[in-house]
Length: 370
Image 1: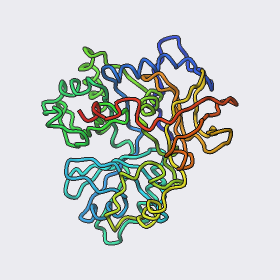
Image 2: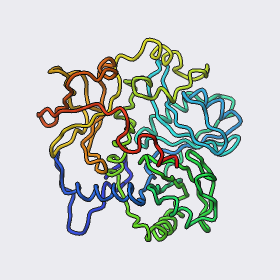
Image 3: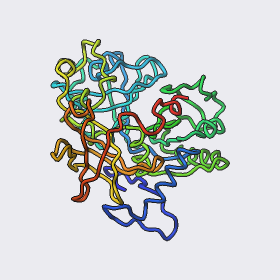
């Protein structure tokens, strides 16, 4: 597939199987399911080079980032998840930010929004030269290893202590994989135990070979973006440009827990406070849909008691859980009560749907944090 100019694998087809376009379940269905099963049952590997990567340095880097981002910044060697808001308190970004040193941060976000975000960052930079931000592009590339056997694979290729106690969820550090220098974050968009490993381009192929060799005994399997989108649905994970857009505020989008209103210095704070005080008029919800051989993709109507009350932002088939899912926005009162009949319209037909407030997979996040 094309990810804003960078090729990325959608799924891995056996010899003789082609990718056939369809609004219904197609030739990829069983093979994407197998990729999802590998991640949930053992270990999978995917490329993550298409994410936007930024390096922020300088004596003013920390206070500047605190002003730009709505959440509290992480401590040294840690990662934080944070929205970014405009002056009206609406979502214009969704990032993971890692503190790699006293005046050094790395930030990761949507590759599709890199130029948009850089325009915003550069407009906000101070004139005194105390902060520098640069997009790393393909000067930094990455691989993600995820699944219950991911730690075993990582331990086989480094002398570092990667036990759960020594390398905890949301830790970020430099590591050596033999002669390969890397930066590693213990985080994964699959919602499973996982690691994001970042290297310069000349090291990506040898890193890939080492990881695949170490994973052979565990049945390691490559997985593409379609499997990743399936895995994130059953974790109630949302995504930029679908659930997170400048149309929405952080509380209606379910990101309120990542907004630190005790900070008085971040852009959009007044709008975020007003949204929390008044309460959002609509809320992002997660649904299990009794669909047939076609799943919601986005922009489908959500019906309630015979009336259209909202819209789907994204959806698909959650292969590990064996259900069709959708995310979308509906009036806050309906989201809170969950009363009445919901339906999602797919290809002109309405299908019963029920709210799913907790993730279907690992609702307590024990796998991800373990």
